[in-house]
Image (spheres, rainbow, N blue to C red):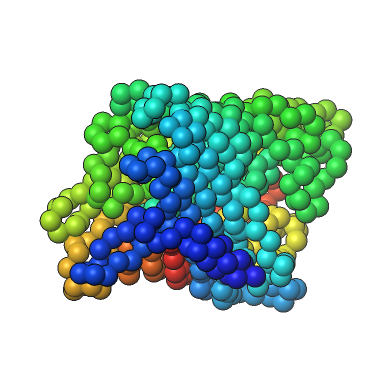
Length: 457
């Protein structure tokens, strides 16, 4: 159904706007092909409308966490085919000052998902540029993923370095936000080499998140969870100092790499705070303690060409994150989890099946990623380009007995740039057993192997 809808939309856009109105690249004498679905609204192209489609398909083999079941049957390993993302964007600069952005799609559809694949609005925002042609101050608002904690909390999905974005920098992911999006008002821009984002967000109540078996009434455990009473605003800020090239501000979102097209060295500091975000009880519900959500990060980001003639480039990121949710907070996440059991028991924490890991917790995280784009001729003429990469996430959460280390190694094969890309990714993660109130790391580690195909128009 989604495929037919996307084809229909693209067909209507193409019919409505004749090909000569779109930006084009020459492929040879007398032969043209559309480079993008873009309609210029004025002669110099500064006013325009643009439409894009992004899809990411996964073919995955996973070694399951201990005790995993699929449809009540023990499953020490799984294989699944899934749609990680299918997205459509429609945006444009309609006057010298007015910009809009609309983002529609769905994530995480595999054999365990409800069969009626229902897309939803991811982003819907409008912005006003105070001064024509200037990025000193842009004011915006709406439903948006723009955030203050890190560049990874506002990712430009087409241009991420690794197969997937890190998930842990989204502290309220799908609990008091919608897939990382919140209703927000913000100001962003650049003052010289300083890139800034200031955001006021109105979180959704957790009671509307659709969380299965969400306890009702006051909290009954000393471990913090998101509060079901009150709805305080969330304040966020991200400051980035650009030592070399400045990053563009066409949309509010930031890429993970520029593939050597820019020389970027940035120092980033960001954070968010919300009072009354979580609660806990030390005495089974008689006393209720309310806690703020306070997260901040500091990071350095580098992305630059190594040899422009050969097309080689280096990308690297190193960030430290302090994540304070309240005492004992811990949350497991398995991306497009290929398993559905077991339920919580004496030794396994809820949600810990399949490929899940303790993604969020009160404590500290260090995250790094690096990649190297090999020379254009490494595979021979017209065979695309290769980019090996690696990521590592280390977390010290209060309820884990030892530091958690998760790493990914992979390689991107750009068959036709980002329009057609294959990625092979191997992830290795620890597993834990619940003992009392603490999670004890097991001796065994588990791996996940994913082949992803990405297409983009």
